[in-house]
Length: 239
Image (cartoon, rainbow, N blue to C red; front, side, top):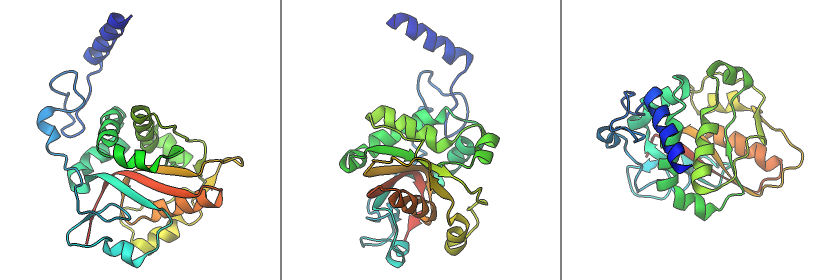
């Protein structure tokens, strides 16, 4: 049975070779999830980082400027990569149909953020949902794929049936904090009336101002969740 699975996996790799998350070429050597030469181009976030949102700090202190100014609704969060090193990979993961990147990103998150996740000891991982129209356009929700891989590696339940996106918000990329807040107001809703989760971790691809995480956390807390944390693939640098 094990040999049969190995042969099947080998045939799948031959017919549908994995693409490297960094260069988007066929992964070399075969059997890896990323080209070994490309791995060093992804820069992991290292201390010092903001004790609230996880942005890397360029000066000493516990909080970045954003978190000093605003009272976020989440408890704490962490990101995996410096945004600049992972931006193109995340773009293809979101918009380019590269679902297979989820396995590599999930493995990296489990390895480097696993201690944080285990310390939180969440009842579940909850991916930030897409509006159904946007999900139909892409064919999948990249945050859900990422959450499922992290959950599989760390044996943490994933609940995609709790949070829904009822408002098809306009793209946030070029909006400032106030515009994002207004755009995201009442964007989420609870899909179930029997939520019994007390501590959860939200999963998303990018953390910028925290507006998405705050609105999602606010909705979850209104539905009975007590503590909300987050994990993101990448975030910018704090000051």
